[in-house]
Length: 134
Image 1 (tube, rainbow, N blue to C red):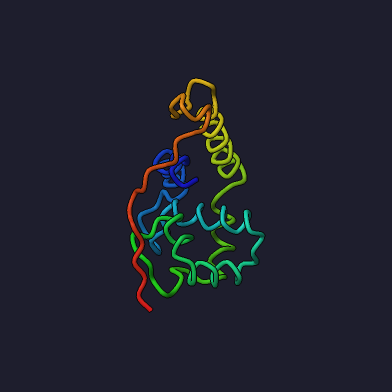
Image 2: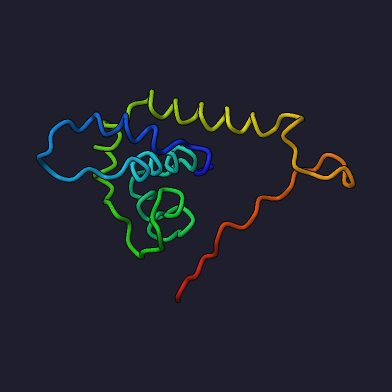
């Protein structure tokens, strides 16, 4: 899902929300919008979301962290600010983008399978690995 969202395109719109160069540094769009997408998908409260992100390397990867870290990069109170900055229109645009890209891949000409096994899609290739230390 993360690969089907045009993060850079939305990042440009998001940067327009911060015209001043003063004040605290804003969280990157991928982190902000990614957290809100995760929260909506799994119906987490603000505190549950922060806890889940701190515990789950897959969620951290989804919203753009390059490697696993043990604590979430924000606290639950910051989600209120993120919700005010990221409009519902931005979330709906991201949703439409994901759906349109998903539909484009499902067309009859986009199947990547050989004719030996009928119309099965080719499995996505591995794009890396995850190393966890306990």
